[in-house]
Image (cartoon, rainbow, N blue to C red; front, side, top):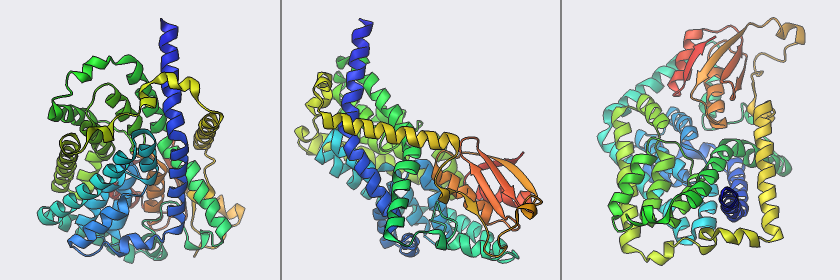
Length: 459
């Protein structure tokens, strides 16, 4: 019996991986191309006005970007520092973690075209609603965050190393490069950077949660009795409230939530409740709640949560009551794990390629051999130091809490670079250690990193 259970579990896991792998890899590639070929100054350029137009633009920009809920917060902080309005930042915070080109492609692979269309549309309109609420009802929070930005800029203007401020202001949305001239200019160089971002950095950020999602989904498929959720099928709203209660506190990324939603639907969860999981799970979790409240204000936080809950429930009810249910039926190949025995050679090629990419990303993350663009070295005004001279530079170590992905790492590096006297900074994501070279004020550095939503202490 145990062997039969293990075999069923393996079949479910392989089947879902085979369905997702080609679309997931394609989504990662498109995300890498967007990262490299879309001008980064475009994001903040259109988000400054305090009106509905900037809110809509922020939502539209956020939908295709492949950022998780932890990575989107420092990005939104950077946009705010560049002059984006409070409502636009809230809209960006809501739309971005719910979707991304990678998760849209994966949604299509496992859940079909209707879900792949409804999911980004729901994220778009929910974000617009949330941005409008923040613009209208969180003006005190907006003044608070604006004063914090002005204070930060004033401190940099007084800094004798003014190039740090100029650099930080110009690249606050650039997560992985410390200098404009360090970015590749040739097509081959840009393609290499796109592949590095897609299949190393994104794999590092998303891979763990994707694997966890697949393992949980396979477990649900073989271990949860069909009648459990089937008994609640007629209670649509109750389904959604149960999903909300589970999804809001826990962390699950936009891609990792897909196989879990599919497995629950196969057991009797309504399509509308599955959409609630896909929306609320990635966008709201205990960690992001704490950081958003601290960085953007308490009222902004409550409006943020309220807009996601209302949007998810309304779109979920729309799917369950207004749209044909056969549009959202679980594909028979997913529900029937026996189909895993009939996989083609090409299916196994895609599975193998995905596994190789994941193992490579995990190995590089563990051994600190990420792409060179992730390491920050300041040399513009200091010149290249001789080896003997570099050894004499004072070195300080800090422990940073709250970093969960490469976007977080780059944000911390960027924050530290803006501190007067810092000549070089290296952040290790695994250990949470920041190594800073150069004479600087530790309290200023700590306050600056905290302004990005992270906790830091000197070692």
